[in-house]
Length: 449
Image (cartoon, rainbow, N blue to C red; front, side, top):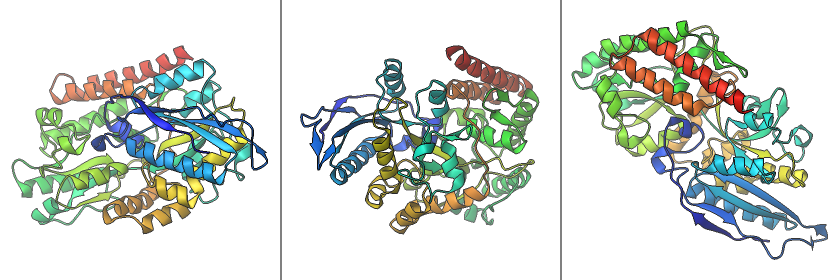
């Protein structure tokens, strides 16, 4: 039984790398589309094909393309399961959390909830159902990479099903590197090798060209560096890095700036590099940039020069990279129909028709079977993102729990990095501010709980 789904209001979003990490594509306006609420069906209740009719509610955020695809999958699910009716509520990223938190506080949250890496916050509130009794049947994670499937686990218990994954990457302009007469950078290079390569590259390209962007204020790039040194931005209970490590990070970027391999402070402030329409990479003045793998298609389509991807620099004692879940589907602990909700979750990630419709909008699917099927139908540019994830997995280890209030800290980190770039703070000062802001973000979260 089909339930109508119509637009209700318009919301706007802010677009930065944190959103990109969650599967939204800033360049295409992901997360900025109209909100919609499904209309009640007059046919709800009663029986269908001898089974009691079950009504489910689901809520997600995303772009219009995601809304269209997800609604199409829900229609397909209802056709295959006529006794289950699904009401959908969907909106852009901005406003989603306020809406969801209001529903949770009022005890009226939907049966199925799309969450990001903040799902542990909802576990701690007692909102989410432990899914372990449903793993195997109806939720089949047997074809998922274990590293990807486990991203939905907290303290050994499964609470979410990964809907797609991304990984950080260095994209490089192959034409600029050819112009310099150099070989492309290689997988596994170290920070020291990247710095030496960059000095040579800039020297050959000449004035006005840079090796890579100043991304000293990019939260997840710093996270990679911190993890390489055996620490974490957040260990699940507290901040797990210190001012000494932060100072080393900022001193390194100060050196890059003095060497002329990254743009000036003013240029970096003008070109945020978070979207293709505000990027020195796209303008052909920058050879390399760290982006999330799901951003690759948008950057490539914005420029003629061919782009390629390699993992982030190696170094330290451990792998710093991780596979970043874009979103999770979770089930409300108070759902009256957890079995049917689990059935729908499984449909999203395993049904051949459904997964083909959803594609990689929420990131690259965790199931190897689904991934192979989508790869077989992918265009050459999209295919690079699939192939890159296979490479990124080899350089990754289990991700850390995301810092509470990370968006507030992200802003503070960028401000500290910019003060350093403009000579308004020392590396030690910037590190001290960064750590202080991180502690404050976590403390604020604890005061709310």
